[in-house]
Image 1 (cartoon, rainbow, N blue to C red):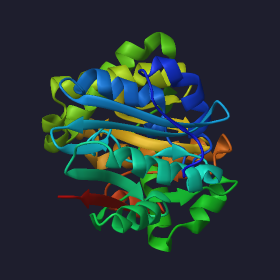
Image 2: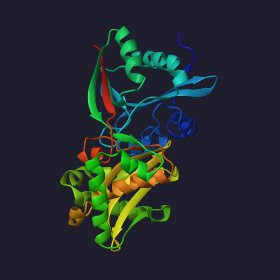
Image 3: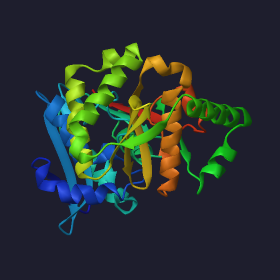
Image 4: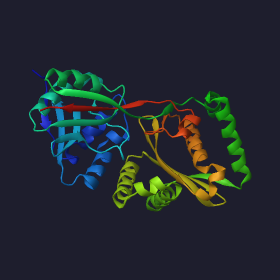
Amino acid sequence: MVVGCPVLLDGFASVQEEWDSLVVKTASPSIFLTPQWQRAWWEQFGGGDELLLWGLRRGGALVGLAPMHRRGDTIEFLGDTDLFDYHDFILGPEAREVFYPALVEFLSGLEWRTLDLRSLPAHSATLPWLQKLCGGLGYRVAVEEEDVAPGLELPPTWDQYLASLRKKDRHELRRKLRRLETAGPYRIVQGGADTLDQDADNLLRLMETSREDKRRFLTMERAEFFRRSFAAMAQLDALRLFFLELNGEPVAAVACFDYGGRRFLYNSGYDTRYSALSVGLLLKALCIKDAIERGLGYFDFLRGEESYKYHLGAQDLALRRLVVTRA
């Protein structure tokens, strides 16, 4: 018998403080697991689906949380891969032996055909636990490689970071920085709470103009989600919007989040008129420099195999998808 009290939670507000405390105990804390981020997604995109906020309490304290929703005969994490780079259940290592059996018991009592869990980091405990428990019930369990999320451990100094790059990449980065210096006066500007609306507009504009696929990606609904989530992350003091200004004009922008000792590079854009100066790449490099100076330990480029990430020293972390099917 599972030791603990399973509960269906009554919305985000009822559990936000406990949820916040749980996220930092997970193996890979990220803003994507916070109640603020998941609530912003649910309010923008969750219409018509059934919210399943399931938790496990021990001694009255919340020790694990499963933020899910049911769409037809499929149960999934909240959020999709277009706006979430990581997913997982939210619990500390000490709760695994009670949480996963209780979760599977709860799920077995619901009507569904497919449990589709995406964007799980390769080291997630969810993968072996659900493979074992769901397989033991006779369900069909499949795990597939979904994507990669490159990142890098940050050294104490910028010089050490440069020394860690491959010789060619180090040479190219220094050359590009020198070329930028000769193009005119430039500076890095960080957005603030008092300019959030304008900063978000500038970022979205630069995203749209930098690449055709980003222009197609930025539907009205996604743009509104960006504004919602940026406001929520600003309240957590996690939002970091950086702009590269050249001759007083913003020519590149990045949206980052600082959380759990890490910097997450969420999205970016640049003015294509300045492509020859590599302004997009250089702003990302200077964001790494800023993260080092702030004492952060890891720079996460998030989902995708774009070549610039590897030129800046990133190593892959695999993301996996777990699909459970029952008759």
